[in-house]
Amino acid sequence: MDIILVPGFWLDGSSWSGVIPRLVADGHRVRAMTLPGMQSLAAERGHITLQDHVDAVVAAIDEAGGDVVLVGHSGGAGPVHAAVDARPDRVARAIYVDAVPLGDGAAVLGELDPEGGDVDLFDWDDFDDADLTDLDEELRERFRARAIPTPRGVATGRQRLSDPRRYEVPVTIVSCEFPAAQLRELGRDGHPYVAELTKIRSVDYIDLPTGHWPQFTRPDELADALAGAVSARQ
Image (cartoon, rainbow, N blue to C red; front, side):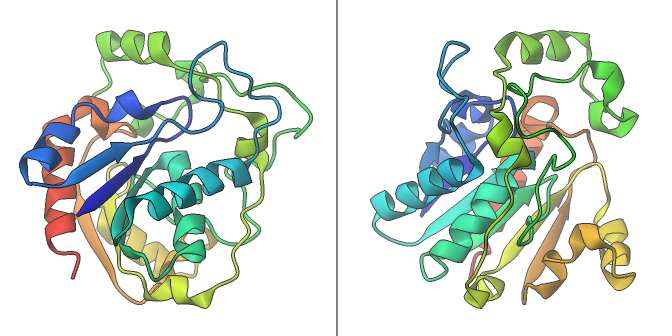
C-alpha cells in the first residue's frame, strides 16, 4: 500500500522519520511530504495558500498510481480531508493524528489576520499543558530548532469541499490529547469541532495518550498505531 504522510504546522517531511521504518518493514511504500513553502527557513511562502497544500497532496495521490492511505497530523488534517474530497475513489483510508477532518468553510486559525506574516512556532506558554505532555526540554529544543514558519495563507485559509463521497472513505482517529471516549461524547453533543467527523460513515479510534506531537514523544507507538490502521483499511 502507498502511504502518504502529511505533517502539521511548522514541520516538514522529516518529522515522520521515527515512524517510517516500521511502515516500510511492513512492505508499504511511504512518502513523507514536505508541503509547499515548508522546504526551509529561506523558502518563499508569502504566496502559499491552503489550496496549494491540498493540490500537493492530490498530486501525490495521482503519482502513486493505485489506492493510497493518507495520514494527516494536526494542521495536515485539512489538506488530507480536502484531498479525500478531491479523490474519494483513490483513498482507501484517511488517518488523522491528534486531529479531526476540517469541514467546509472552516480554517485552522481563522481568527488570525490573513494579511499578516508567516506563523512562527508559538511560545511554549501559549500551548495547553495537554499539548506538551511528554515533550520534554530536549524534545522542545529539537522541535524549535527544526521548526519552519507556516504560511499564513495556510493557517487562515478556508476549507473548500464539494463531494459527499468523502463520507464513504473510512477514517481512523489516533487520539492523543483527547481520549476517543471524549471525542465520541463531543459528537453526541453536536459539538462543532467534530461536526464533519460525525458525517463519516466508518470511523475507528486508537487511543495513544501523549501530547500533540506523538511522532516525537511516542514514535514507536504511533508507528504501531498507523501500521494497525493500515492493515485494517478494508
